[in-house]
Length: 169
Image (cartoon, rainbow, N blue to C red):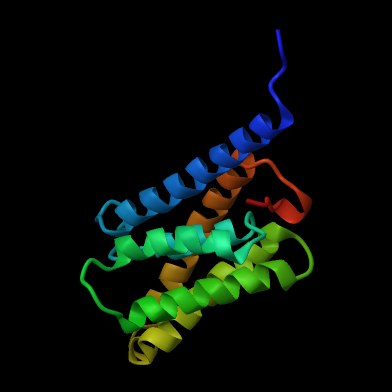
């Protein structure tokens, strides 16, 4: 009886990580487009939170773009570029870079980035809404932070870590 080769074991781990990452993005996209997550007229930006969390588990920007693109399919169904999608994509790419540069604990950095990204999204996508409804945005930010803590905890459980909670694909 032969033992499985190291390459097959590594490929199996990579496949396992990809399945989890893409499942998180798909579930986030479905929930983003449903009313299930509405709480007192506040809806979290689950896709943003999932992509921010995944940034801590990917080392390579090229492979990180795959979940970003998949999330984009759930955010916009019509052809063409929408300003909000461009802002969303820009923010998650900056977050990816920051997730690798910020010192300290990944969980604390994730909390900081979820809160900041929520605020910057509205600042860039709809500054008037930021001025008209600051309490709504603050409520969404808190909701995003709670959802982010849950997603980060689950992701930490499902992904095997390398340094600073990242894996290489």
